[in-house]
Length: 113
Length: 114
Image (cartoon, rainbow over all chains, first blue to last red):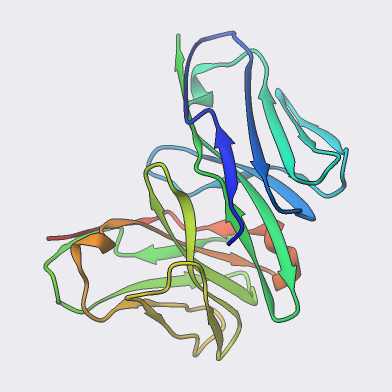
């Protein structure tokens, strides 16, 4: 089936540093999504990307939908302690009888004050 | 407040003892889904439902059952739990199948099967 490869699996950074993570796939997606999961909670949508090449920002977060529609990256600038959590990419697949999200394995971010 | 609720939040059970995890949403969403989250594997879809009485298998349906008798509720049933079903489970809902980017997740249910 379709899979997303997300990297890195984990990151340990100092407060104030920039962070970059990405997702790649062998399949094309028509929508890319980035979620954040705080400890003990469900994922929350950060950014949604709808068109190839699209670059979208949400505060200190910037994400891009790759031109080939097979990849996406998320950047976090000037990290702060509350950025700690697990970040997931997801691709949306829609077909005749339904649809679903395919999730990456997650990137666990730790920020040292 | 718009939300997805799950119960219980934590459950420890023994192999073979049937259990049900409830999920309810108050947003009148058509699409609901169950995922399991395991370290290094991300979230994998177990079952989904596009509307009342319409359910279908996701990527890892073995050992699970679901039902959708009402729009707001989508319970997950484990008829005979086994240790490999120890995991963190999330219920989610979206307005429609074509709007999965508006997916709201519940707080999660941590299940341990001994």
